[in-house]
Image 1 (tube, rainbow, N blue to C red):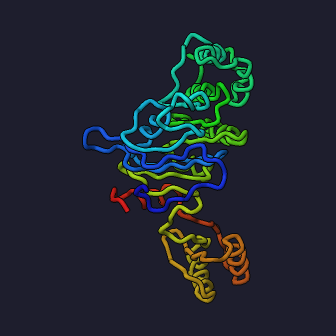
Image 2 (image 1 turned 45 degrees about the horizontal axis):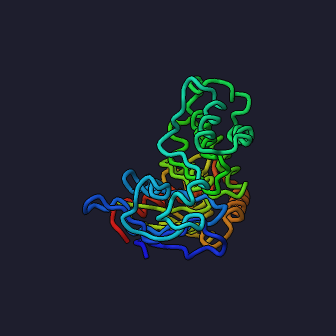
Image 3 (image 1 turned 180 degrees about the vertical axis):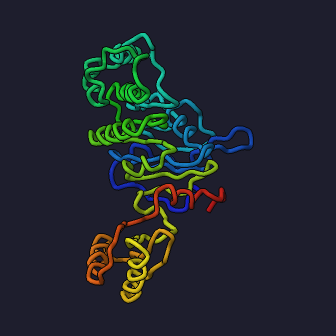
Length: 319
């Protein structure tokens, strides 16, 4: 079921989310069309796709905010059609945090914990996990955007949820803040929680996700390990000489090595093939030195997550 290019079967362990045929239609238009979701316990899964691909709608359906037009399965062992049964075990940050500006960080968490009936004794641990210890007494209005996002994630962790859903948690955050949130997501999953995270910053997801779900026009293109996401471009070792004479000598040396070599504007690209790229780079570096070639760059270059996703969704057609 599902219109994907490559769908992983069910995991061997417990599946926190096991949903098939998830669909949402508005009139005749399907914003989510026959999507299968399988999230293993303790995994970090990236939900990827261009604007309008259906990412936020899927998250909203899992959270009971939007009623599916079709689809069946379970979330945390409870039927998808009964979100009230599993929502106490789910934490979420959707479309940015909304807090009281005049309250402190801790005061906001205390308020929302009371509202949801959560045990407030865990708030110090939450503040420590999201890196706001020492600033929990400051008013929310004085927080930077990164701190606000971290407090939003903290609110999602109230009640010690088993499934955490984060929609664009690094939106508008500076590079240092992105690094902090990246580390935080890893810590959240390290405690045994399952994380579903959406972001348009694919380089960020590449650092933290072990699985990805790729959507386009509401349909599923790929679901599975990040390492098995299809690639259309071979991995290469990029080498560049210190000058024209070195480049010419490098070209002659590489031509005699029996390798597949492409000359580019930024140097020479040697296809990695089935060999260990680190060992190949080391061998080529040694051979260049033996030939008196001065190298200014030896770089292992592989297709980025962004490139691979664009290959899947760039045409907008379904496979």
